[in-house]
Length: 276
Image (tube, rainbow, N blue to C red):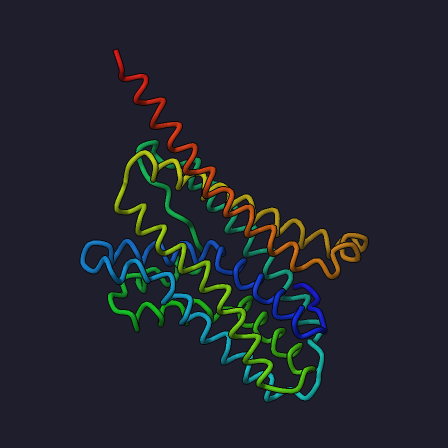
């Protein structure tokens, strides 16, 4: 887990980038996909907002943990074991998620849309049949009860405690949730759009996005391992957390544009082939 800046404004910017990046977590994508698909026919309006509701529930747990930890902590630094264990947990989860999503693309039938793959959803899969705003938010809250999310929230709180107390921890939690809400909200809208048009565009776009999410997960995991084993990499990356977070966002956004372009090109090619 990265070292965080000690300037409050810089910390908010970094945490906002972390929130955006966290929203691209494959577990989030898989859960929002399941919730959106379940509600697509019976309640399409709710389906469009499943991503935002999931994120609000998830963020509520993060904020509560941040406040509780800040109230129990008096100007203490994050324990070394928390940072080390959190880093290895993140590397393990990202590696597993990356491999799962790449494998899903490779084994998918050519005529099917590829669905995002997650780990938590395999144990909480039944919860994706939530059919009300409150239940969708509850699913997001339950997904936040994991070591990687809670340790990240605790680290934010411990860092914010240096600035004066629980109010700053609340601010950091809200900023993180805002970044996550932006990503998950857009993702829910995008998935609902793909469901409505299960055509060639959806099939190509889903493959590109799954490959990119899987590849980015593996790259971030590899970078985290490099920071642990190669001190020079850790020194070089110090203070560049915001740049890395923004880089992930740019790559994902560019992959979305690429997916649409490839889908359009594929449709044009198929149409040209059908012409006499």
